[in-house]
Image (cartoon, rainbow over all chains, first blue to last red; front, top):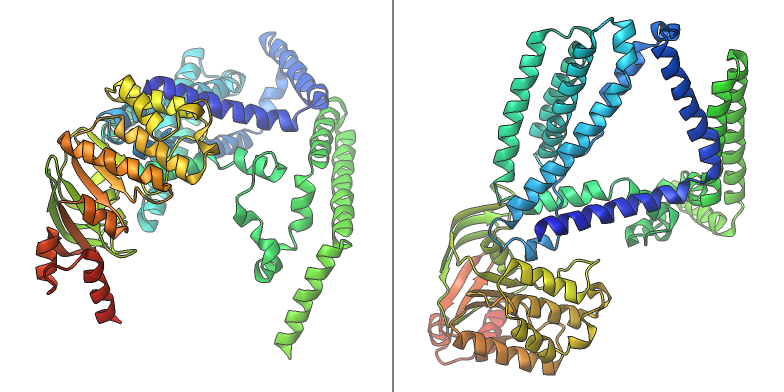
Length: 343
Length: 226
């Protein structure tokens, strides 16, 4: 039953994310972004297979490594708990443990596949630029994909710690992760793979220890709720698809809070408008198309044009917003209160 | 069934509860009483294992059901799905569950989402979900809040039946009249510690008012404090 319940939760989560993507994607994104990028990838793959990809030698490796370093912070691990589990699962012996174990399996499989897939995209770079054998590249992919779920797990465990322990832990973890990543990419010595294997073994023991404990449920629920509601819920709330919690409305009611936020309000209201947001995405998709097909001088013009359009859009919207009666009323109250303070 | 909490709280080293010790007996109802913020719900959290820091020993049966003060449910599940979930996690009797649904007048809304119910109906769902488990120990936090008079009377009868069945019940309540009528003994908590403990007669004697009712004892305490 718990397995079925978890599957239900995962399906719900995916449906929520699908809803989010449906909200922002339309055919223009497919036309200007997905198709050109897809064609570009197919073309370059054929070039690489024919040994005609000289550009690989000029790829900025430092930027790609930076991307990988940033990626390491992204995949989130969390136990699939909800507040009501305290009531329904807590009294059942073993239910919490099973839920934790299923969460581990789900997230580890997800993060492993994601990392391995992304790293395999860098296959040509390793083969042609660093002249590494296919076996070595596959080993690097496998090692990174095995390590990433554990790093995500440790990041999750550190989230619940107190300030000093939390940030010192994050520092050690990030340093270790970045060092291992750089060494695996640039100097993949056999000792490194053995060391990575030891990290994986230690991590497995830690995960096993954590998943067998029934305490700390409150903390797990808090962290899980926070992680799950971080991105998609925020976007859906901004969009109006999800009801907003009341605190989001309060800046409009309290002068002090409004004063702090009213400078950003034009931008927030701009992004809250689905048509404006879709326009932005279409603009970026068109820019991407232009960058792919035009020579370098044209690319510069495209970027300049997009930046100009963005500036004009935000400027016009801010102007329109400041002309609204509501804004002028609150603004005059702020000005009056500031003048009173001066007096 | 014995609860012995030396120290407990939401953060390590910051005790909210201290030296709380009492026993629950099969076939008996123990009332956990005290003012707002005295530590009653925190004691339950400690017993239930959801308080972050607990030092002490809590010996409760495996078969344990809990009815929270605030209805806690899955927003995306209907009442029937909630019942199905409980039935899959515990051994339940379908006929008894049906009777409970009839008692609390929920049989017509089993296909509806619990999140769409009123506060009182949600509280009834919590009661049904807990009682259908036929647990050996029941922990009930403010069961009468939000219930109409008919449901309250039916709940009192059900609790009597559970006591007869040999269930150990811990009842947290502010409704002193109902507590006095139902409970065999009391644990009175004040500022995270036990103030008085025992039967009504023992509490009356300990507070210097032998034979007094709970309300009178509390009233005297309030007047003395003011």
